[in-house]
Image (tube, rainbow, N blue to C red):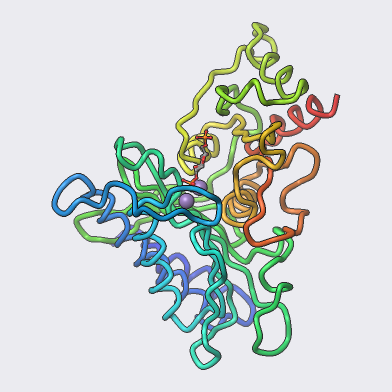
Length: 330
Ligand code: AHG
Ligand code: MN
Ligand code: MN
């Protein structure tokens, strides 16, 4: 058979790594099994017992928790938590980290936004899961703040799954960004997008312009600039905004351009979570030749101050991030 499965691909990559024990392959395997479960649920979301709608709970970010948020969170926590490869799990939906008992713990730390784009669940628009993996840093068995709050560049691997027209699994372990498509008849992910590179520039911008009144003057000027007509600089740019970060990011990764969620007067640090959204996608985009910034500093150079802290995010083609940073500074 010609096609490469995700597990074969990871196993081959890990064989090349120094001191590989197979734990990373096992962890990735659990992630992909969880992804298949969630994909099945998402695809069936309109039929049978309804998994649409709210749970009636509110999460640590003051957002209403949807049934699918909870289902995805439980699925990933259960499968990854039992894998013997992680010592802690943190999630956008969990106020406190899950610490795995010493006897069942491994050396990795798993972080996730289990269901991204929840506002699109019941309108049949792409949603996803974003994940990130770090290695336990501190000596001893105890999981400390040093382990949970690492510099974003310390990620061992990161990626996302999109539950869209097809289910895609995109990941990097620092050796290129690779994409796999789920064959629903076989229930297997096959390599479909090897070594993704983001174009250096791209005339697409992605932002919730409904928030314009709350932006600072430089942010407004920058977006106005993108809309001016100047064929030499490929302006006006085209606007695309879905409202699911994974989907907006995936388009940006493949076509180039910029996705932004800036800080504003209401929320100076913006809306997106550093560890569950910004850092993993920053690791992916950097491995595809792009960049991610909070408007001033690269996301990968930053250490989060808390598990649930937020950050402004500008992510995409390298030249577009440079342009944004220079215009936001003025
Ligand atoms: P989540 O569904 O995990 O809470 O994330 C929603 C995020 C992200 O997916 C998207 O980019 C952004 O919220 C959209 O926010 P607005 O509705 O404010 O544009
Ligand atoms: Mn999200
Ligand atoms: Mn979410």
